[in-house]
Length: 204
Image 1 (tube, rainbow, N blue to C red):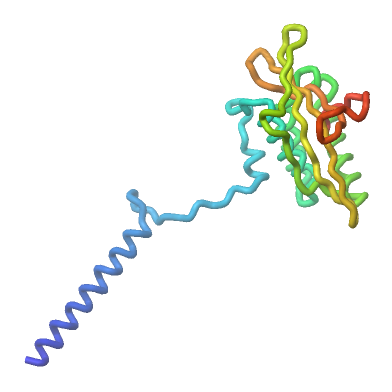
Image 2 (cartoon, rainbow, N blue to C red; image 1 turned 135 degrees about the vertical axis):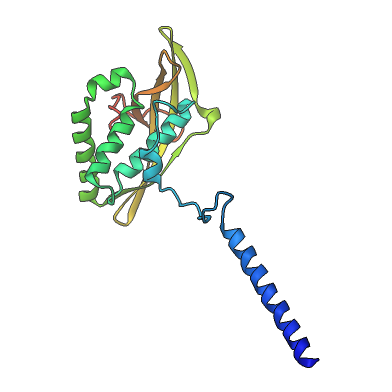
């Protein structure tokens, strides 16, 4: 009798273990029979380089500068390879107005960005973070039948033990497809007041 009881208990334990193992496997398997994997984190570099601006262009002037700032940060990252730098430049060119593209031919623009990044590294300067003004602070206006927008962006930079914050006022123009494209930018203060008369080419 005791032997039969022990056998019965042993059988129940085995059955419980089998069911538990089956449930464990079921949780690890998808409905298609493949093991579920945790989604991989997408780096900012991958996010920027995989962005298809032709098919999925930013919808507002502010969001254009947000994307441009992501590109600028990566351009000034010492870990960025030369091939990545070229790809970043190609992505940035998607955001430029046709007039800006005329004065920034691809090869010249890439060379300019490389020189700028090298100068930053040589001086020990780094762009730590960037910012863009609130949507309510974007200034819209029309001129010559074209729609324009001013967007103020900030760049927090370090150099040695010092730091500074640089502000730039971007001018964007809406093209025939309704896309906001960068025309130029000017150095300004935090309130958007221009601090110089020269409009700089938006070369990063």
